[in-house]
Length: 180
Image (tube, rainbow, N blue to C red; front, top):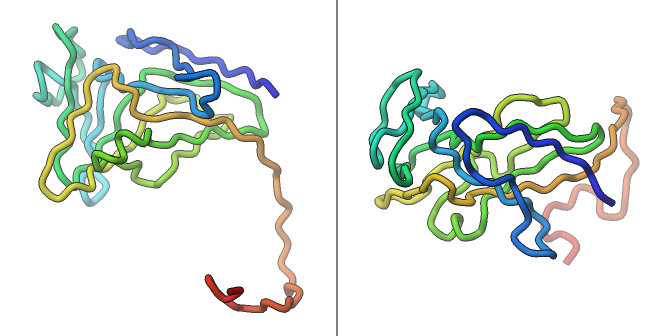
């Protein structure tokens, strides 16, 4: 089955169109777009917008500046950052876009804050990867254009929810590992 996904390039994004790394890749690679506004998330949930200036310098500003070379974002230990991907996306209803961290970044200590990002078919805002550095001492460096996440489009069904007693089974209330 082929699904049509329309990606709209946002200003400042010169990264290539998201693509599959190989003919058998399940995930569509998306790259960090560090010429767009990043968001730092404080432990209490406050968001602070910033642009990168020079390598690793964060500036609170509403004015992007074209950078020479490849800007790099340093994510401090236990820091959460919303990394812009530079795209908006439109795809068919009854599908969801799931965003996963690429395994190479996971090995370095980077993870998505919610494990997997869920993008609904009616969302039309900019795509971000909300990442967390789980390292206790080492910062993680992301360069502009680094492929950091991959997207998988998945069909789903709508469930009708009712309130009613559930049937019993042989397993009953046995938890994980209870079946052997």
